[in-house]
Structures are given as C-alpha cells and as structure tokens.
Image (cartoon, rainbow, N blue to C red; front, side, top):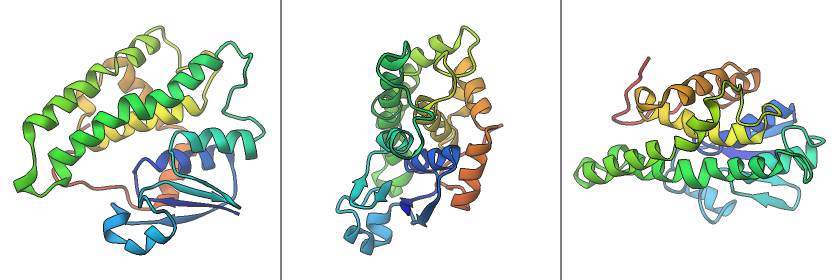
Length: 217
C-alpha cells in the first residue's frame, strides 16, 4: 500500500490532496512540524527530515510537486495529469513546478522569519521583503485567471491546480488572505470547495496553527 508521511498543512498536503482526488488507498503517517526536530526517529525513514515522503514499494519520493504527477501516471490512469502532445502539456508542467519553485519558496522564508523563529531571531524586514516577493510572483496566475476560467488550464482541474492551489492555501494560513489579488483569491476559494480538498483536510486531522498567524475572513 502507498504510504505518505505528512505534517498538517505542510507542503505534503499536495500529496495528500492528490491521493484523495484520485481515490487511492494509502496509509497516512501524520508528524508534528518540523518532524526533523520534533520526531527525530523519522530521520530513519527520510534522511532530509522533510515532508512529504511517499513510499510505493521500492520507490521513495520527497518532492511535493512531483508526487501528484507520479500518482496520476503510475496509479491514477493518467487522471489529473497531461501527456506530451496535449495542447496544455507545456503549461501543465510549468504550473506544476511554478507552485513550488516560484510561489512556495518565498513563502517559507516569510514564514520562518515572521513566525517560526524564536522572537529574538525573527527578522521583520526580511520577512516583509519575501512577502512582497511572493505577492509579486502571483502576477502570472492572476493574469491567467482573469479571463474567467475556473482552473489554470482550459482543459480543467489538474495537478497544476493542486501545486499552485497549495501555495495559495498556505498564504491564507500565514495571514495573507487579504493581500491576495482578486482572481487568485476567488480561485483559492473555488478549490476549497472540492470534495478531494475537504477529504484531505479531514484525513490530516487538525489544521496547522502558527504563532503570529491571523485568521482572516
């Protein structure tokens, strides 16, 4: 059986969301965050001490944007993935990696220096700079969604939406909901109505609560 190591609302949520959207059977191991500090025995499973870790027999994956594509192509009969030759294939790959490399990276710097570090080590100026960087990098998604489409690709919901959608979900968790541009915010709220999203939230149990985060409506 597929096994996923996950921390509530961490990057590994992409993998959990994908498992639920595809309706796959899996065993879930929920860890405190960060697991490399709070559950050191996990280093025996993953030397990096990061989540996600997906184990499928002898296959082990640790990249949150790669796992949904793997699950789709190996276990999901291609659902939520696109193949070479599809008109949206290039855009699919670009968004799949954009969600992590372009959007989540600056968020993690903001999160660390605004919330996770001890108060004496926090860096408000650094955090604000990376918040600004993240919001600027939403321009492509905002422009793409401005034509009224429901999802990033004209062909419909895909792993691209799981990848980028998680970055928007994290933005809301860390208190940036009111900073999100109009179309990105509406898109985030649409994604949150999906059954697979709700099932993933239920499967993980309690949502992540961060020091200094503000719940916004």
